[in-house]
Image (cartoon, rainbow, N blue to C red; front, side, top):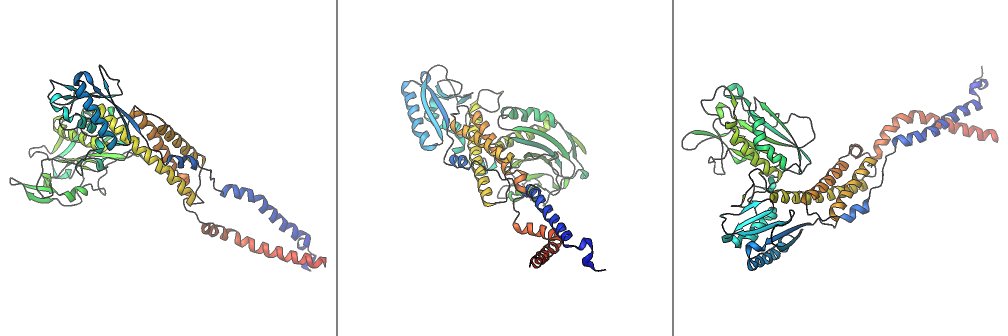
Length: 485
């Protein structure tokens, strides 16, 4: 039978079939567009650019007690403070004046006393003995701006961990090899944390929300062999300065147990095995030093615990044995979160508060400056990244985070923050929102998706169907034109 006489081979039928394919493609185009298009909302670029030249300036008011110092001495103190401060600390707005009686609670005050033997601090008041009157301005400035005073390398600023609203403190007791004998199987960690660490955490609650965890590990080998040397009395195993840098054996030590994205500060008690006992820290000349603790910058602190020779094979560490360990942990924690030390000879008169208001306020101000700068840099990086990568999505959640971070920064720069804790709160919120926007999973998922990838996906799917359809369509158009002629 002649194929041309078949109904389904007729020109009308073929053209209807071709038309149905075309209609299907046209109807599917909106769905394809909506499912493959990238949401790219506009960001408040002009507001971000307007923040670039702005600088955070925090006021500090100092009052000199004229009644205790006398008019002449008080005048000299005021003039000396007014001369030194603007030249050294342009980012702080100092104001210095006299007062008599009691000063306001948010004002830093200074007085001279006849009967005192050494400088003392009570809340925001500094009392200086009369015989140290010439040192009063420098003492006050070192209390208010300790981060500008020189400090020996390796002791302070480079040790401080990066700011984060939440931190985990992981207290870990590591037995190098419990099977070798004299292993620690328990410790009174909860009592020691309550005694040595909790008061610090309570006072720094404006800075960080801390979570505490503890554990014991019974096998934690070193990744190197300590140096065998002698201190003149006995053979010791020493940790050189290079050994301290690689002391943590990350491959075999399981230090953090919680599943969380919060940064961790580690505090480790390391109990060496019998074969490495006593384990001591060596100086640059490979001589043993008296300290048994050291800090790893921005990571945590470690204390070496050499058990006595008469220790039982399975030992439980008591509070007495742990006192010096947690005393060291407290000092390491203060360094890691950025608490400055009081100037030499200055003492606090409030033993119930381990940190003075001077120490807390200076850290609040320092963190506020750091957070404000980091927030601006993060927002500017987001804008540059979005401009450089056309395919990067910008969703509603990202734009909302950027806008809220900007609002927090604008409030921070517009305000006059006599209370450093309030400035810290706004700067912390700005940093948290800016970081969340920068690391948004929706932005990172399509960080780089060039056109070549699209061609590689679509060609194997549509080419086998499109080629015969296009060929048939051309054939039908040609036949239609011939039929018209």
